[in-house]
Image (tube, rainbow, N blue to C red; front, side):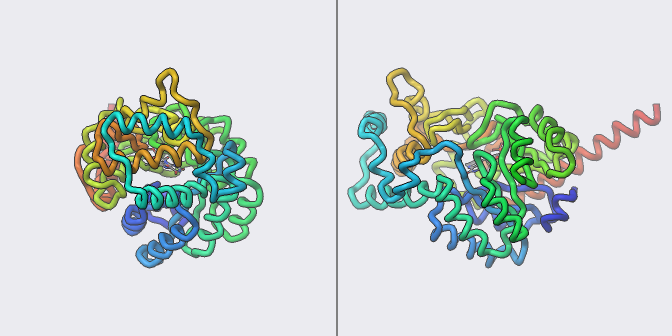
Length: 378
Ligand SMILES: Cc1cc2nc3c(=O)[nH]c(=O)nc-3n(C[C@H](O)[C@H](O)[C@H](O)COP(=O)(O)O)c2cc1C
């Protein structure tokens, strides 16, 4: 299964795991894959603590970091991260509060609310170009970080130059064939071609269509990974057949015991069907594929306030989300998840997933070889 990209980065398997959870990163990396920590919701200090822990546990293996560098964002938020809460209009707060109080979700005690708000501002303040640069300064002090991926657009020239000078591979997420050439021109060395099936920020082109478009657009000098809707070894074979150098999965890890979700959240995840993973703007102000709930749908109704720019909608939404999780209110629970959520029915472990993906890969390769042998014998 090893591809040239694995040899370049120093991992055994072309299975890349995106997760915000350090335990997932460590277990995938130890199992021969390549973990990439989603850093965008951390403050620089939190990221430093996470990376130090990962360094101590990955037994010298390489791993990656993903930061969000949005092209469109609230410029006031960039100037004054400490005042982020003040930039959220009262009308938007009232709208959210009405949904929660009508559903009987209790308000937080004043201390809890103050702590949560401070935490959200610290984390979400990293979702601007300067915020991302602050995270990168932390990441680059960790020698085992061998890949940095930019979500939401090509990384700026100073970031590309800095990463390359330190021998760190530059990656970028891509949801449209036409964006691939732009990434290549910006100096990106690895493109994650992420189809609409994916959990998280996503476009509307399917993985099956997008991957060959991206591979063709960038040619052999740029590595391409297939992402979106991948949860089986047969889909790894399919991705390699489409010209990708491996796969990049996100939703799959949410069902593992190592993931950041608590038992209540996992119970909602396991009950969800593929059709429940919808694209909505309620979580960040940009399209995110996430579990449908009364909270996500309320923002789609006529009369709902307009979505706020990054990172403000995320701060508002995540405060409500934290209250929903504490209240264990299933019908209001929305978390980013891709269409493969319908295939996740029980808790697994990262190790089990890694073994299963490899077994299914071999089984599929065997099936293809049999088809080829039969055709030859005819
Ligand atoms: C819970 C969750 C959060 C995500 N957050 C980010 C993010 O911060 N940055 C990013 O580049 N991708 C993010 N993604 C997208 C993943 O990187 C990945 O492309 C996607 O999960 C792949 O599709 P899949 O969900 O079908 O496996 C997220 C995905 C999930 C499920």
